[in-house]
Image (cartoon, rainbow, N blue to C red; front, side, top):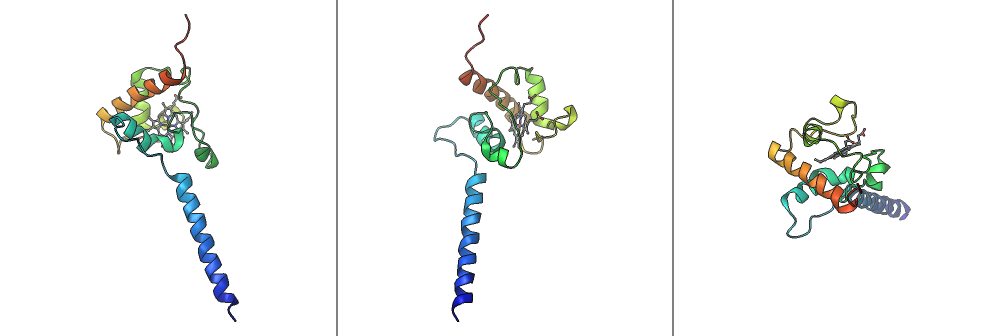
Length: 131
Ligand code: HEC
């Protein structure tokens, strides 16, 4: 007699666990107290796909988003103007549709701050090239 009720409770619990897992998977990392403005922007808008350290995340890879390693200078060695346009308009105009544009979310000033932050990320990880 009680079986259907038990089954219902189990299904509700299972859905709860699944939803919590999904929320955990998709949650973006929280900025540390005292984090700089560009760092906050990075964590809020970019880290979901690119990871807090810019090297990409397996979470994004699960959804087949392959954002690449942004700490690799050969990849992000372009001019500030290139990076600015990429962040503003996304990758589609240059044939890289995976990267969304942020024109609607970020001011030009914020985008410039992020370009600076990208340079900082690359510097943090890659030692300066030997000449
Ligand atoms: C929805 C996932 C997603 C988000 C959010 C995202 N990106 Fe990307 N980004 C990508 C993907 C995918 C690529 C790789 C595109 C390719 O190479 O085809 C990429 C590429 C890049 C590149 C490298 C371009 C190149 O020429 O190699 C930079 C720089 C970049 N993203 C910066 C950012 C910044 C800054 C933000 C936050 C404002 C951001 N991305 C947010 C998915 C994302």
